[in-house]
Image (cartoon, rainbow, N blue to C red):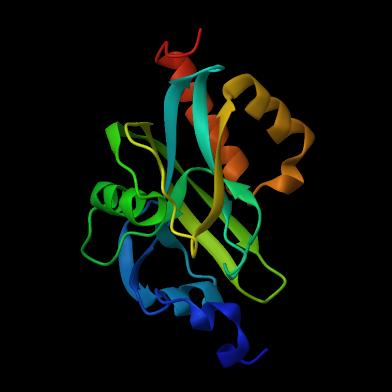
Amino acid sequence: MDTAHRPIAADPAKDDVLIIVDGLDRQVGTATKLQAHEDGLLHRALSVVLYRNGTDGVEALLARRASCKYHSAGLWANSCCSHPRDGEATFDAAIRRIQEELGCTAVALDEIGAFAYRAPFENGLVEYEYDHVFVGECDSTPSPDPNEVSEVRWAGLDSLAEELAGHPERFAAWAPMVLTMAMEHLQRASLVR
């Protein structure tokens, strides 16, 4: 497929310069977002799970990816996911993207771990990410950017665990790992009884 006809070509962030890393998350270069996904280059990424104390106890904020996304459109994912730009700290990128994607803020945002995954897509693009996972408490009402997120919902952790096990096809490739890490962290932190 011609690059000009790939959905990522319309992504306003396609020319963002991403951080290319090795298997230990050490920077080895840079590439545009378009190049990183076309060539399947391992790059630094971030995933955020926001939580609140809701009617079902601790609840995680899930985001359905907008229909215009170049991969995983319409699938559920964690609250926010993106890439730090070259020269940008991963934590700072997480704070920036929470505001840009969700129109809200978080408190007590902590990095809880990282993992690498590779997911090829039917359109020839590849997500190959060293993904840093952050968890924080949502302290304002989400107002998502419709170019990023078509809808959000709060899910109690027990029902979310059941949905991940019973219907993984509803979720983006990275979401089960990210959400499982977040749920385990929240349980260890004694936020979940």
